[in-house]
Image (cartoon, rainbow, N blue to C red; front, side):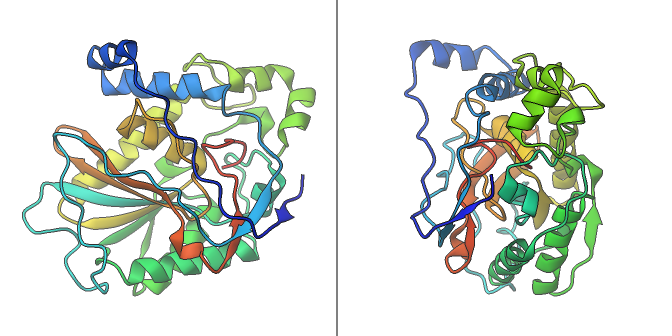
Length: 309
């Protein structure tokens, strides 16, 4: 399952399904956490099997428009030259730019990485430098947080270097989901070697843990949403970066947009969240890889196939 190198245009995300009367009443009577977990659960089987991995040169449309929400605010001007205030003065939210780590060889092979400490490959390093250069030209970054796993931490360090040498703060709450016995395996091998663990991964039960020390959806949800909420409380009125993994991004997306179809979270994609008092989450944009216009990258990503984080 090694990646094909192509020069095709990046495939845009599948559009969300049309709204229905049942879905509107469903959303009004359930809490954000309940809706988010149901969104994650219902998407597991649908998005599990990966297509053959291929690469593309350059970026295509893969972004989520600003959410329509009574608690939303106008996003900060993104063309600030790196020196302007992080967000407009007087606002009551933190702007958190959540970045998926750069590419690894296991991403290219379609393996479950989970909590195994896989390093970036050379393409992943180039991607990380590119996203760092982009962020250095935008609004001022106050802090950089990262999962403590190597692939995320190295991505964060390359971003920090481009943005003036900020210290990278490790946050284990941002690490990838533990896939238990499935870690290090490709899906077909995982299904054959560990059928019970594979079945647990595909289960629609959000409290289903994966044999071999793997986490449930509930556990990942609690861990990573708490982490992002804690970061937001420390940085109200500021713009910060958090480098994490595909599975975490999928979960954060479900928390902010429980009724929307997931987008593809490609390596080093930018995803901008606004978090404010009262635990209000607004997703301003998602899946942005325009900084990879001159760098080849895998066109399959977590959310579109969810096989490697």
